[in-house]
Image 1 (cartoon, rainbow, N blue to C red):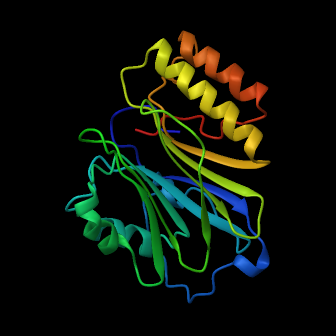
Image 2 (cartoon, helix red, strand yellow; image 1 turned 30 degrees about the vertical axis):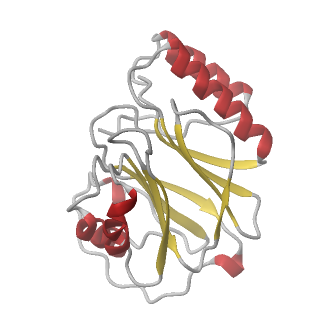
Length: 221
């Protein structure tokens, strides 16, 4: 997961999905991209779920750009952290959706900033799950209908303290027991680029204990 307050480039994950959930659409030619572009670094097999994550740091006035990213990169699901939206700003989420896409959202109720959203193909039914958390950790959890796959989007705001780390650890233990197959992604603000940081060491061990694997091993910002 992106581990910095700076906006990372999109990160892609691939996971198999059942045949009856594979979207049917007409592919358009993919424009030529530089070789270092993260969107072109992995092939997308027809049996894969094409998903991406962005720390958007305010969706306001970026909605049409998000619309274009989803369309041009043929995304099935896009996860957004730090949307900075209120309940009166949902037009930005609506405008971000290409035709035949829907969204889920979790706005921060107590103060400015934060906020999570998931934009997905309407042909992929996401069932929202409720897992008890605290105000120290924002989360949006859903399950893909007719599968055992749970998608967990979370944001751990800075500053990183013992209290916020323990909140994250409790949350991870909770979701790992609630679901068999999990994709966990978001912005945890934990410095994985420093393997000797005490919280990095603790979280790495915790992920291993919970049979969760870190798939991102390069900087994303």
